[in-house]
Image (cartoon, rainbow, N blue to C red; front, side, top):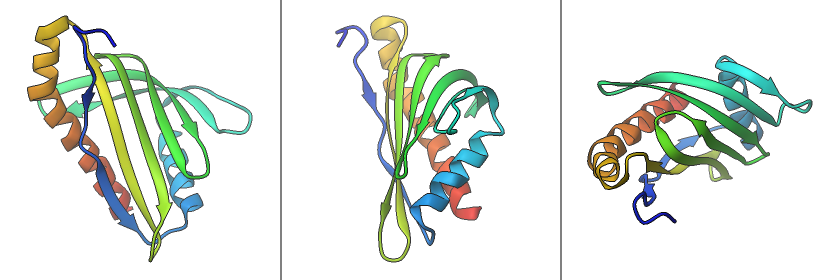
Length: 140
């Protein structure tokens, strides 16, 4: 860990869905296939894509590697506003259906000032963005 750019952890976000784990993973795979996909592997278990959006007043654009397993999706930041960013979406069988949990952490650019901005501004906006995306899953 670089002492000038420590990780900032996001609060976990959970939603309950009345679906099978495979249906949730497939829904994510379909949804993410509408991004600016740079490459898929043959099995469609790994993709590299560009994502753009809005978080509060800030626009963002990233490139990420996304990996799919039967119960987990991982996002690894390649480029964009962060020095590093890692996210996972876990799909755990529950009664009824599944619980979908988003976990994430990020490291800001620009040393201590970037960390302060990340901790007290970006974290909140990032968590809001994730909550909106997870709510979108429920609505879908």
